[in-house]
Image (cartoon, rainbow, N blue to C red; front, side, top):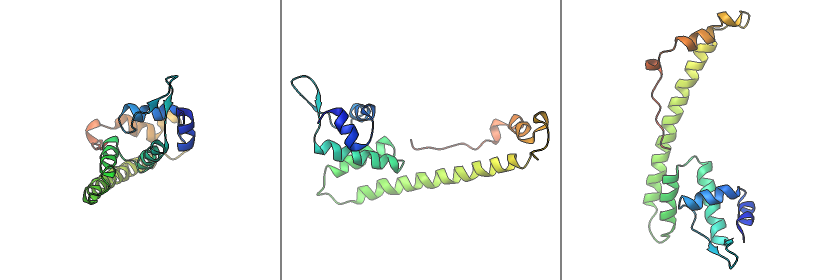
Amino acid sequence: MKIGELAAVARCTVETVRYYEKEGLLPAATRSGGNFRQYGAEHVERLRFIRNCRALDMSHGEIRRLLELADHPQDDCGAVNEVFDQHIAHVAERIRELEQLRAALTHLRQRCCDTQAVDACGILHGIAEMENATLPERHTHL
């Protein structure tokens, strides 16, 4: 199948297919006599796997590691568990950061009573008064 067909079957864009191929997550396709990329069922399966990992918010490094592990089906899955345990820890940290963000936004929202002029808006004044030092440092694994 050609790249457009692969993208349609995997429910993504042609650009996504090219990007994953360039990143080494999707193996390069063979080329036809007319220099068209030709993909097979293994590309569909791998592309769906990549998309499912992205739906779980996994980084390319995590996906790459899982693909390496999947390419050795006879090995035990301890390393897969390690990747997932680390990802779960990253998600827990992001949840903590988002809870802090929600608290800060809620605090700002409480500074406005909806009936005052914009130039007296407590939210806008609160944002203007914020110091960078009071902003929590964000951590991301991506």
